[in-house]
Image (cartoon, rainbow, N blue to C red):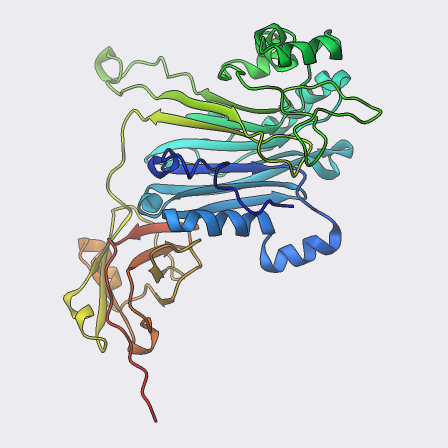
Length: 418
């Protein structure tokens, strides 16, 4: 179950997250009893609700989420980036009980970020020291099974950038528990790194080729007595291990030559890890949560949204709240697209105050000439209270917001007294 406060976990009290553009959160072993799942299907789960509540005041909006029993992945972004996050797709692969049970496996969210294909993969792999080979096989299965629509990146490793994280369950080989605890107490963690199964696997398993990870400068995150910072004191006395990890992989740049035999003059995608740490203050689990902050330098940046929205001057009069919008060439419009009016601080794309269908009589001509189509909000759909709002164009085809306005103050609807 979630703790009351996740402020430090999200680095909201440090200023670092205020500069962040995207936040991806992977959870494992969320309460997944059947009666709880039925409730969650209606009201979403408590973890997702908590993260939306905490992040929305910082202008983060839930872009997408995927759940497989107790494994959940959420991706948030600042609202003004939403038009540049397109082609959002999710997938999940069960590997528990030979592929029939979703207590183990992987869930993913892939999307195009400013024109670059990025995939977030949250895994929960098999437990126990002797299951290293099974972990490798399950990871290979997840990579093989997960396929996305479209030519840009059909498989996970086809993406320009992959973030792979979760309870990967790798353990520390050979060393006995006394030495492991001595190394932790003496802060000589480097003596444990070379016996870490994942570090060993990165240099011996082809499936892990190219995956990178920052140094493990924090104590092993498993296994603790729940409610404490004390390693397992039960009869089993599990050996501490870095089970909870965050890795990344940049797709190898194409070595093909461009026109005229010259190499393309695109820049290079680069990733810098600014922080990699655990959070000892959280005691709700027998694991300690792990967080990482990355700076990603894209090779180029798509800076024109698929849909541009304009708040017409008529918004100053409640009886004529007109919205004009223009679609980029090649934008796939659907008759189910709509424009939502959102209060600044909204939590997810369906968290609107009101909406109108993005249909208009002159829509086809607008598409041909790339002129503005327009729709109108009726006076009844305007907000009752003052405040800052934005308009967002929701694309049914891409399941994402394809255009937003700057914050503005719409006219306030005044209720008639009888």
